[in-house]
Length: 321
Image (tube, rainbow, N blue to C red):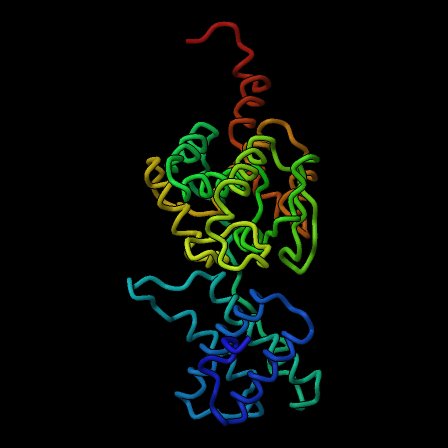
């Protein structure tokens, strides 16, 4: 993946070590997405080091990394806002893993990031969860008179029915979906793990219609087994897919946090409100840790209101004032 080394092409020891680290990630079968994220984090750190005349990994100390952490804390975006603590942790994590690898492979004597404290990240609730009626309005937005409309409807239905992540949908291949059994095989999801999830009949019907009527006319290489193709007959770009979903949400009157992930959040919250066991939602979403799924219990307010209405002492009084 040549793009992994963009902006790290210098001949200095720091850039060379970073390129070797990214190459190691590829060789050891880390996902493309992981390599891209690590590259972004290292590029920012490399630029910061260059401005301070730091050209070798051996020059970096614990104090150096603490100064970098403060730099990230004080950094402001174009609109004047600071980086979220989760974003700061994301940049620090890439650097920490890099130095851990250097120490483990004996390229430096010690790991300066071994005791680095990370910013405490916010456990933010998903915003703007869509009600089922809102989702149906979004699903109705594609123009079914156009080929792209049928494809887009199939994509939206797949997102909402399975709750899969954006990159997982992009990676889907034709034989990953078993229409007869109503299941989807998700290969190398987050953390490099495979999983099998159910998919509803309505989503299957739209996928089948797209595969038989639309896909043969847009595929650029008949050997390509990618399920969902863009207008050039190739795999979707993540940003392009987000833009498409966001446009449909805006047409449906959804304002604020419009994204592919919003369909995932909305599906999980609705299932929880309808009585689904959180362990099944964990398996469906592909969360390695149940703590990641627990956040949906905080947004399933309708179920909480129902329990409140049935059990709160004030509700049991016969006469209201």
